[in-house]
Amino acid sequence: MLLLGPLLIPLITAVLTALLTRHERARRYVSLAGAVALLACAIGLLLAVMQEGRQSVALGNWPLPYGIELAADALSAALVLLTALLGFAVLLYAGRWQEARDTAGMYPLLHGLLAASSAVFLAADLFNLYVWFELMLIAVLGLFVLGGGQRHAEAAFKYFAVSMLGTLLMLGAVGMIYGATGHLNFSALRMAAQQPELAGVLPVYVVLLLLAFLLKAGAFPLFTWLPASYHTLPTPILALVGGLLTKLAVYVVLRLLGDVFVAIPGVLLEALGWLAVVTMVSGVLGAAYHWDVRRILAFHIVSQIGYLLLGIALASPAGAAGTSFFLFHNILVKANLFLIAGLMWAAAGHHDLRRMGGLYRARPFLAVLFLLSALSLVGVPPTSGFWGKFMLLREAFAQGHFVWGGAALAVGLLTLYSMSKIWVEGFWKPHPNYSSDHAAALAPLPRTAYAVVAGLSLAILILGLFPQPFVQYVEMATAAFWPARGML
Image (cartoon, rainbow, N blue to C red; front, side, top):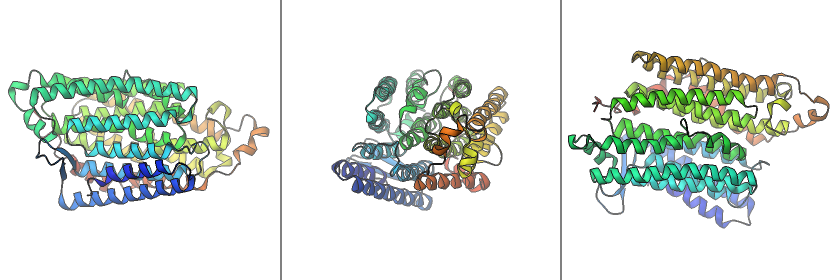
């Protein structure tokens, strides 16, 4: 039941909230209750994995490897818990948030997204993975069009067009892998991939599969849909989608390369490393160019995806551990920064840094919360971002990838520039139109939203000040990744 809970609880909550179309308060309470239940189930699943080891269940009354398998190990269980925590925080933040129009569809779609995200982390076969990615696509498309305006429709079309391309690539690759191996289950594929007769064709199919997930992750060059569409989402939805969606695709890439298709050509990993560098650089340059807070943070999603792909390209247990730690850190920090951007919008009335200012004097606590997450995104010691980047760079330099590591350091400096731009323009400089806009800057902000941001900031602070238990955990969780990797 613990394995099915992360799927069933949000799906049931989605149905209940959809039925309560005329009862706004009841819909909100049911939604929060479902988020709490999901969080409790995720905690129970993680404890079960820690005490008993890998958890697995086969559905459909078919024996493995032919049945639909859901499985949780230390890595996937922790990510399910992080998803549940983020979902609870976002729903609590939304509450009476004026930017998030409380339409009848928002809560069902949010819980549908939580169910699909949890299922992706727990999926143990390729077709099941494909199905849940499609359900996630439907939920996100619905969230894009909730606003009902032209810009929402345009954003939804951009996301749909790119996602459908990834879907076609994924479905085609899954079909060809099944045709070559006769299996879809991860454990069976791990064994089939070692057969010498498949060495000539299987890497080609794996490359097609990886292209699908790299597209969904927002890697270079097909990432422009992300900053062109994400800024149209209301803040609570943006925090969940921006903090979680692309990381799901990166997790799948890590799982497939590090745990399933281990014996892959070295040239593929080399290409992935250079793709990571280009993704980092292109994302951070886009962030440096823009003045809209949401667009800056959206481009930094692309940039941070580059760091995660770099860790995967290192193809070692240490690289996998660094990728996992950076994944946990980035989900928390990115979601929190989007939530803080929402509070900046509530205080200033817009997202344009050129028309903003004086928030440090008006909202000193908000300034401190932003500074903590911004420094963590940059990787300033001793924040969580520093430890994540340190683990990745240490392994990169140990393997002799000095250009990759040097590029990652340079991107960190450019990240500091764009975060400093938000700090200087939004918080530090005097307001450009003090007399007319000062009252708006002093308007009361939602207390619940403030509390959520403070809570996530505390989690980020703990992750940075006391990293050792978390480092040990991810090292344990990824110790079996790339075992004595053979190069085809």
